[in-house]
Image (cartoon, rainbow, N blue to C red; front, side, top):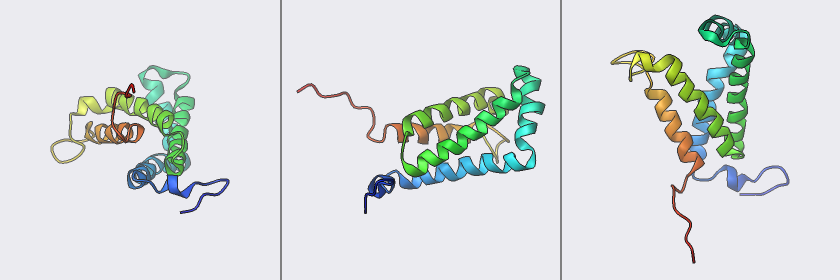
Length: 140
């Protein structure tokens, strides 16, 4: 692999590459279409504002969707993984609390729109934040 002034390909293609790319694809496909088909507007005006976020529902919806796009870019580049993951985890937890929890565990099969997918994504983000696990620093 090569290292240039802009891109460290060794770092990009490390052992977390497949998970990072998978999450980036999921985040992009969850966000970008809504930016062009009215989905962000519906999320902000017809959901967030209706559940108590008036008057900031639409700006909040845009912030959430744009944060997904930025997170996807950071995942691809393998940069700022911890802050990007932390922001996205908070969004996923809020999604569980506000939308998915009342639907139960299953996304499909035993139910609909449940928490299992968000739970899995949170676990993958935590792994990316701590790919070597939580180890106490040795005091030599």
